[in-house]
Length: 184
Image (cartoon, rainbow, N blue to C red; front, side):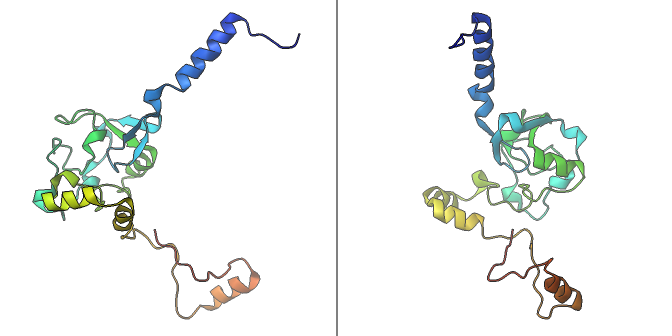
């Protein structure tokens, strides 16, 4: 009985399943409308904006000349990635990654939201000279610019440790960090 040959029906089912799983449109990345991060389309959720408080995605500190012009600003004044909107002219379905969706459900602003002074926001609204500088910048330059801002501190170091901190270190449950500060 070796080698085993699949009957034609089983072979066809295997090929159809493989074609369905490997369908190229599923793997083409698309942006999240909230953070602009490119994600596989299978991992984006088409959400109704009426289900969320989009005022969390506003930023009154932005200058008027940088406000979006490539989509209808009627999304409660939210700063969004226009490429993640199904309809740019009317308030409609918007694609969201799981991270942004879960934070917005808790009625909080996602850390990576474009409204949170993201470096990628309003590239099309920048003055021509600045836009040209970004276009000519190397990948290293862009990485340096995009990582120049901290959103949270993960370790707080104090000058004089408290008694409880000393006890934790002595018992071995907390090990001291050396030469490393992590900022995210």
